[in-house]
Each structure stands twice: as structure tokens, then as C-alpha cells.
Amino acid sequence: MSESADNKLVLLSGWGCDARLWQALDGHWPNGLTITTPDWPGYGERDALDDPASLDALAETMANELPSDAVWVGWSLGGLLAGALLDHLPAPRALVLLGMGERFPHPEGVSRAALAQFRKAFRRDPTGTHAHFLRWQLGGEPSPRAAHRRLRALLGDDASADTATLATGLAQLAELDNAERLASPPCLVHRLAGEADPLLAPAERQRADLRLPEAGHCPLISQPARLARALAAIAEAPGRTTLSEARAEAPLEPTP
Image (cartoon, rainbow, N blue to C red):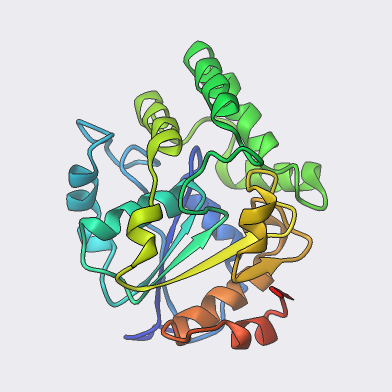
């Protein structure tokens, strides 16, 4: 992969998955991009924060890995956290929310009651609940079993974060709300979603700038080539007001 001083993408993983997940896109990137995949604190081999819930501490730890001359791509919880960090770090060239809206709970998606039950189950059995989530989030993929095998090949069977970090992540999914900061964002914000994402409410999928066909919550696994082309198009011209060029290059399902 050749590097560019301008076309930088920072790829940020979601709950329960470390940065190895992004290896699913290897071999699908066009030339001319600089790709980085930093782990969040507490994931992979990275030390957890003393206070995993502190956004100030998170911003300080991630500052060097979230430069302002890059496009930040946050998948799932990664998108929620990246949006929250807009209040703490210089704004990027653009922010891409992949499989995430301004907030996570939604009456027609994952309700607050369902998320509360999931958090209760996690407190009782962190390992089993994490494994259940990895399968659950793949429910919208064309072949969930094949997607699960691919995910396990990338991440293995063990949770890639410590229990305290995972518990904090569930709390952030329940509590973080970026609606106010994204109403007048300091950078352009693009929303991408799988057209069959079971974790997003139908209204959230409909308002996405790009909907990836034949994909659910994990287009990284089910549609890596299409996703890589769409992200590359954003990196090459993040200031565009529409993503018509990206739709043409992917090709993707256009939003009416």
C-alpha cells in the first residue's frame, strides 16, 4: 500500500473487537492511502485507562492517533466514541459513522430495556455474553455462519479487552448521546450502514448517506471490497457535500 500525505484513514473498532478486525479489508484498498488501525485503551495489547469512562483521559491517550489531517472512521461503538471526542480533540477532515447514529439505543432498534438486559447478562457471564454478541451482530449478513467463522479467524475466541473496559463500553453505548454535537459538527459527517443492520433502527438505516447492500452490522466482514472503495472515496475528497462519487465507485445502494 502506498502512502499519501493527505489521504489518511484512521479506522476505529467497536465493542468487543480489537483492531485486528480491520484486516478483513486488507487487499481491497486502492493505492494512495495511509491506513492506521489503533486499538482503543484496554483492547489488544494496549493498557486500559485507570478510569475507562473518562473521555478526557481517552482523548489524551488517543490524541496522537487521531490527527486532524485524517478521516476518522468509527464502526459501532467506535463511531460513538469518535463523535464524543470531537469535543476534546481538533476536528478531523471528516468523520465516518459506520453502523452507528447519534446514539445507540432506539425503540425500533436495540431498545434501552434490551440493552439493560444485555448489561445484566454481561455482569453475570462476561465471556458467554461477549461470545453471544459476536454472533448476534452478524444476524443481518447474507451468511451469518460464514461471517462468524471469518470473525473468529480474525479475533480468536477470547475477548480482546479486559472486563472493566467492556463493561464501560456497554455503559457508553447506553449513555453517550452525540445528537447535540453532531447537530452542528466541526467537520463533515458521513453515515454508512448495512442495509440489513439488525442493530440499527430502520429509520437510522434510511437516513444513512450510503447503504451497503447485502450487509448487516459488519460490512467489514460481508462486503469488504465495497466498504474499502467507499471509505477510499471519502478519504480522497472528504469535503464533498454528497457521496455520489462514492456510490458510483462502490457501487452502492443509493439513498433516495
